[in-house]
Amino acid sequence: MNKSGRNRARNSFNLRQRLKWVGLALGLCSVSLVGRAAYVQIINSEFYQRQGEARYLRELPINTSRGMITDRNGEPVAVSTPVASIWVNPQELLRSPDRIPELATALGMPLDELTSKLSQKADKEFMYLRRRINPDDAEKVVAMKIPGVASQREFRRFYPQGEAMAHVLGFTNIDDRGQEGLELAFDEWLRGKAGAKRVIRNRKGDTVESDLLRAAEPGKDLTLSIDRRIQFLAFKELRNALIENKAAGGSMVIMDVATGEILAMVNLPTYNPNAVGGAAPDTRRNRAVTDLVEPGSTMKPLTIASALQSGVVTKDTTVDTNPGYMALGRYTIKDVPRNNGVLTVTGVITRSSNIGAAKIAAKMPDQVFYDHIHSFGYGVAPHSGFPGESAGVLPRPARWSGPSKTTMSYGYGLNVSPLQIATAYSALGNGGKLIAPTFVKGQRNEGKQIIDENIAKEVVAMMETVVTQGGAKQAAVLGYHVAGKTGTARKAGPGGYERGHYNALFAGVVPATNPRFATVIVINDPQGGKYYGGLVSAPVFHNVMEGALRLMDVPPDDIESWLAAQQSGKMGHSASVLPMPPPETVIAPDAAAEFDAALPSAHATVPPAQGGTQ
Image 1 (cartoon, rainbow, N blue to C red):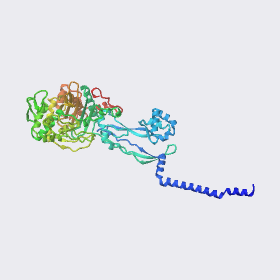
Image 2 (image 1 turned 120 degrees about the vertical axis):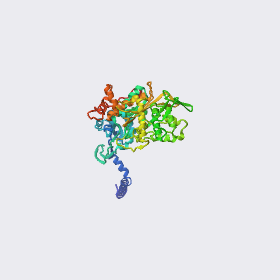
Image 3 (image 1 turned 180 degrees about the vertical axis):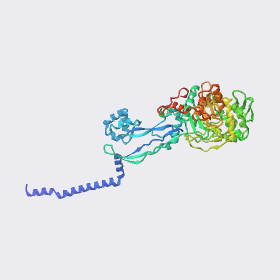
Image 4 (image 1 turned 30 degrees about the horizontal axis):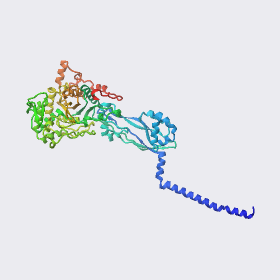
């Protein structure tokens, strides 16, 4: 090649120029990298920090146990047991699709169902697979080392008394939050506060370090006023009564007269709070608190107490109920089963005279009558703290029609809950002092004197005659003076009062000379051939109070009848174990131990209701 050709080749390869271009390109790359680093580290640092922490740092909750609920004697009625829940990071598991069939088999899930759930949550980092399973079973699944799969400790609520206490306690949901009953009312107190920890994971998803961020605070325990032995006894006797009378349902409330504490509250039909999913919504309602009934003749002692307090009658005032019926507009009211003639005020209660109650109520001005009945807690919520409690219906005088006061005097034209009836009768037994009911042991609500103490005692003495001479002889308890009142109220339907459909009631206090318990029984629509409160509900009072008096070691106040029965050899089982007053040589057997033996254990539930309780 000639010399001129070599010069042209050297000119075509300019090294210095090429180096300049390479340097410029490298400089531009450096600037780009520096700019990107500045963007990542300064401008958008939070985003990338969150992304990094999502892969290596994770804040996990530390679940805590819910507070235990016990009865008044410290026996557990609601406890939390540890369980485990299996969860997965769908993003991580989907990167190992060959492990999905293995996981489906371990969980007992159809493969297509699991695959579908993972696909729906493919953009998420957390999804529950199984909740509330045995911790040992969860440990076996985690031990399989399937990518993204882990377990979390949780708690499940268990109710040892099952159906017997379902309406009082309520239940919790899958997240252990109270949904009904006292679980809902005291949810914040029982729930506690969950803790939190931050865990660091490596690229395989294994935890390599964890830091406690916030310690978990267990829920606080709650001691109820309920006595589980009396509760179970009331449940059993009410269920038996519903079966015998082919009734649709029933409620019972037992209160401590002096404190307002609820010792038992039972409703049927009921449900199993340990398996709420299978229960019909209607069975979960606490009818003793939420449902309303017309009180029927259980209203008459309140009418008489109001008349005595207002001074329009005395206990010896006579009332002419002849001829046994009375025109009331286009209706006629009458006494059943016969004309009672001339009665004293006491006789009006003994004979349960509608005519007598109506004539006594007529002596009071409308507003006076209303104010007295309202003071017994009718037409106002009981303030027990129970969710959904009803205030009932007590129309004001301005809304009354011609017969309103007359019908209210013997229990029609107003609506109350069984809890309201129990509260009113508790006031009669407590010397005229009304105390708001409570479900918490030791909680002392301020009482309000609504009628004179002597008048309250007079009315209680009048109610004794209902048991000794009137229609509630089956409510008698050997060794004790019992005061009570029956009630039989026809049920109202869409077309008015329905023939053949009644609520049978009994309300009473015992011992009558120094009342300890106020008890109300309402049996809904008995169909066994009898429907009067004295025949249907009074025997339940007898059976339950007979046991409750023994369990609470309440000494008899009718020693003469007890001794007479003993001498005649006619003592029943209950009489032979009555707690006796001095001399101290008389020792009552351990009634509490006897009833404890009959209660369901912590691993059993009360058998399901049968027959008419369904």
